[in-house]
Structure formats: C-alpha cells, structure tokens
Image (cartoon, rainbow, N blue to C red; front, side, top):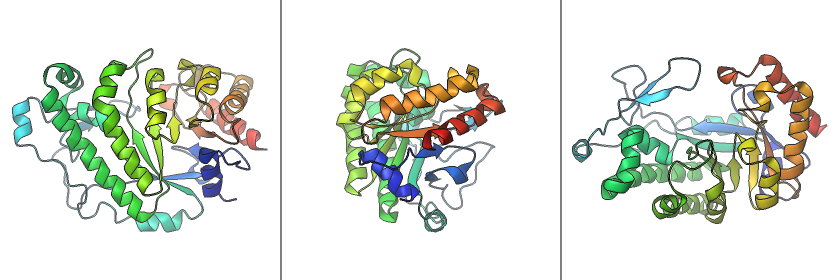
Amino acid sequence: MNSREIVQRAIEMKGPERVPILFFNKDLEKSDIAMVEYAPAAGFVPSEVGETEWGFVWERLDDTMGQPRKPPILSWDDFRSYEPPDPNAKGRFDHIEDFIRCKSGKYLLGTMGITGFNLVTFMRGFESALVDLYVNRDSIETLIDMVFSFEKEIIRNYGRYGLDAVAFFDDWGTQDRLMISPTLWREVFKSRYKEQFDLVHEFGMHVYFHSCGFIYDIIPDLIEIGVDVLNLNQPDLFGIERLGEEFGGRVCFNCPVDHQTVAINGTRGEIFEYVERLNRHLGSYNGGFIGYVEEYHSIGMSDENYRNIVDAFERLNR
C-alpha cells in the first residue's frame, strides 16, 4: 500500500497495514498526508502587513500563530457595503495541479485555513459575534452564510481537482465546555455544517474536522452529520479511554501526544506509553486512528520531546 491507500483504509476502517501519520509542520517528507491550501486572489495587495482578503489583519507578537485584529465589520452598518472575496478568483488554484503531481502516492488534504465560526469572529470581533447570536440573529446569520458559502465554492474546486479530503479548522471549545451552548450550536450551525459535509461527500472526499478545546457535547452531532476524521489536539481533556469507548469505530481520530500535557512535560517513556494508548483505544477498530506530529516550541515543546514523539510513532509502526 502507498500512503494514500493506508490513510483511506484507516479512515474507512478497512485494515491499514500500519498507522498512518500526519506531520503538520516539520519533517513533511515523512507524512502520509500532504496538505494544500488555496492561494490569495491574483493581484491582491494588502494595504498593510498581515491584512487578509477578508479585511481583518493578522498579527504575530511572538512565535505563536498570532491573532486577528481590526475586524472590518465593527457595526452592522459596515456590513451593508462589505464585499467578500471571490472564491473563484483568478490565481486561487493555479498551484493545485503541480501539488498533485509532486505528491503522488500521498493522501491529499485540501485545507481552507481557519474556517466557519472562527472566521466570522475575525470579521465581527469575538465578543460582538457572541452577543450577535442572541441580539442580532438575522445579521450574524447573514454573515455566517456569507462565510459558509465562500467555503462551499472552495470545496467544489477541491472536488474538481480530485483531492482526497477537505479540512475544516474551526475551534469550538474552551478548556471545559463549548464557547456557546450545545443547543445554540445545533440551532445555528449544525445544518450549515451538514450542507458543507454533504457537498464534500458528493465529490467522493472525506471530511476532516479540527477543533481545539472541549467539544465533547457535539462530537455525536459531528459524527451524525458526516465528519470522517476528527482532529483533537488535547485528547486529555476528554480522556483517551473515554473517546475510544464512546466514539471508537464511529469516526477516525487524528490525535497527537497531548499538546498541553505529555508533549510538553512528559519523559521519553511517558511519550512512548502515550502513543501506545492512543492507538490501543482509538485505533483498535480495524483502523480508526491517524497519528499526528507537530513541532510546537512556541508553547514549550522541547526539541528533545519533538524527537521523542517522532520516535514513538515510528516505533509503533515497527
């Protein structure tokens, strides 16, 4: 089997010959999954460093990924004249064919950057967006539909190029709960995600969904509406055993050594044991588990522990 076949078998629980691994930002040549993102429109020129096509500005003050500032829709009056970017703009997908040729044999994951509600909060401001869900429902839902419609066009383009999956990166959790009530999430967002996921499946692609934080309350919903791969980077928030007992065999998990605990503070032995636990509880369903490796010095991961994590996944497959 090549990497693509191994990943597909893990996701569909059809008996991969080993555990596939996603290397996110380092040692990419070792990764079974290759990621590609659409490009800015040809001719887009930011008016300042970090400005995006959506109009907010991305700022980095340290080695972390940064944060958005200057939301373009400070009031709903601003929204009346707001023009979103064109998802089909010239230049957006010119690099995809070369990517496919260069990554022959890999499982090809088309990403959309930060998506969905997270992008909505960048446009409106986090606190304002949360308030809007209660006091300006019609307006915020119009903005949500604008963002989700843009993403659906990106999905269609990825499908036409024959990619294997589409990745959504939409953080929903704090350390111990959703950012909004599960009831409100189901009322506003569930059907909109389902439309996107159905579209992904219509093109024969898998749905890859990332969320940081504690999203336990909506995991059954995400599975119900079509998530094929669930990327949780803090599995200790849930408990590995609990994830396996309640959801193992129903969705394929893509999890690292927990980025808040063992990946930062663990010994080599603890890291090796953790990787074995991940596979034992999440991947014992004729598949169902993809390993995840990310270099994360910005939150305290040492070079030694990064190497220990790589070694642990490699030993798992030996």
